[in-house]
Length: 194
Picture (spheres, one colour):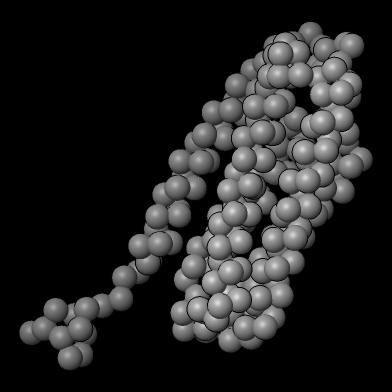
């Protein structure tokens, strides 16, 4: 007998190496965020006042709006994956471009808010409150930045015509990571901002 299917070919794997790699990466990232969130909760629940008096309040309204920007980018990423699966390549490129724009907007708004908070006296050295805020939110921001850079590479490949309905694994793998950064944010927003 051959080693797998008709004609002696090999059977397709249950999950591709790329998908498996990103899922393993996300398992590690989940543990990383869980550790930082756990540390944050220990400090927050153990403090007599949170946030401490005298420090600026976090910008909840603009961060609510920015949360919707990031969540909308998850929707456009999903639409890009759906479009490439249906071989609607122009729509895929459009949705990837919108996702890049929304992810970049999220980062710019977050950066502007950090500048404003620093100007109003909230620093990394502002005790446990400042240290945990910038560490936890900065960790997420770094992940969004990496995801945007990855997405830019996928977008460039899409513009070069490298994807079809039969060859789109890089779009799907990038989407899995993008969904992760979108899913982590509402948890952080709720825990840190409220």
